[in-house]
Length: 140
View 1: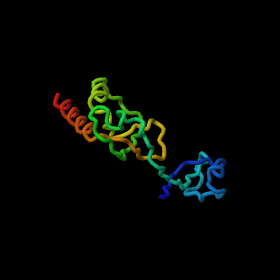
View 2: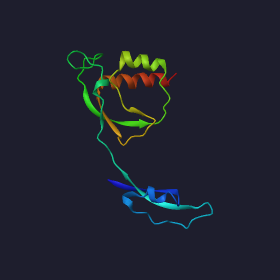
View 3: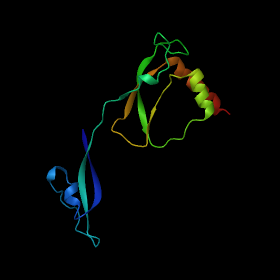
View 4: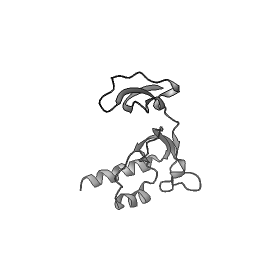
């Protein structure tokens, strides 16, 4: 677990409320004309366990890839936070038909959580089909 330090400008009046554990941090600078003090507060960075996203896999009755009938493997993929541009309708259609089990990242939304990775089920044939499809589209 690492401790990061964040430098903030806190009002002299509100600074004790921001201090962790009832201890007021020592000011880094003297109060300015606005009555603000530059303070350094420790922030604990915790990394949570990966999200398990097995329910996103498209499986047949035997638990294999519904498109390729190939066994699915557990993979750890990064979670991307922030507002992402959506894929086009051509990609979404191809994904449904050709490579539904080719997740290489999970979009986590705009609210950044302490989780950095997700467990997903991938089909190796879906991953190859996605790569071929993307390569063919780049040539256009």
